[in-house]
Length: 360
Ligand SMILES: Nc1ncnc2c1ncn2[C@@H]1O[C@H](COP(=O)(O)OP(=O)(O)O)[C@@H](O)[C@H]1O
Ligand SMILES: [Mg+2]
Image 1 (tube, rainbow, N blue to C red):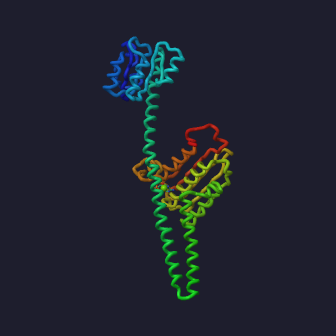
Image 2: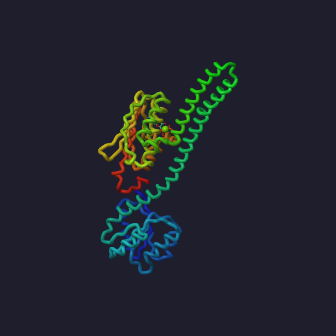
């Protein structure tokens, strides 16, 4: 039985009894106190913690607005259910709108159990949203990790290449003959081209400027080409051209980052023989992206919730990005049977209703 701590504002002990009975029926194990004056209520609020206040509407020595004020003064966020023998609809609506969570008529007390359950669920949800601080910290940690990776690559790869360039230049400077200098210059040119590649790869990781210039499809083609070269993995890419007007910049970037993470995971974890990236429009209303591999696969539930999830932010950031752009992300995988990441994004024509998932 769930424990429920009820502060009942009620002048009639019989009505109080009916309320207790309804809540018992609804399966609650009650801590219950009845108060009928401001002093009593104030004292009860100061003395103990409560899950819900259930208050009669007509009180001879006290009033609902006063009761609501006592709660507000203490900075408490307590659900408040109003019960009344008769109450005009407008009066109820204005009170519920002002502060109360719900109202019931005395003749309809059977609704009390379900009403309490709903209200508690809502307030639990509200508390969960304070978890977003945790999510934010994770996001920041993930970004730091990404920067660290780029710094490492800059240092290791670009730094090394530049050092070699310097060494080659010195050799040319000290060349004994014009012929020797020319040969070294050829090598220097190749090394320079390699350095440019490496830097543009790093830049692509930082921000895909092709996305701004050419749009999602071209940016993905470029990224996949680059990926094949740098990881030696062949990708079966089937990317339909998408008109930039169909998706705004933010959404395009979100999709691009999800592809990046999914492909990076394949290179890091999957040891796959076959990798494919498909992007197309379904039914004129949705963009569907599927990235699959036939590699090692993994237990999605464990990777998401288990101890294993600690310190790994890729899957989480894919999900966060998907929800930020109002898209749906599905990750299908099992140990031994490959992985598919499927993203479904509503197209502009399909985005008329504003929704909080849209985040625009
Ligand atoms: N395509 C894949 N194939 C096999 N395992 C994968 C794949 N994608 C993700 N995983 C597993 O899921 C885990 C979590 O991935 P992610 O959150 O991106 O973190 P990270 O890549 O930093 O380990 C990985 O450590 C890996 O075990
Ligand atoms: Mg990863």
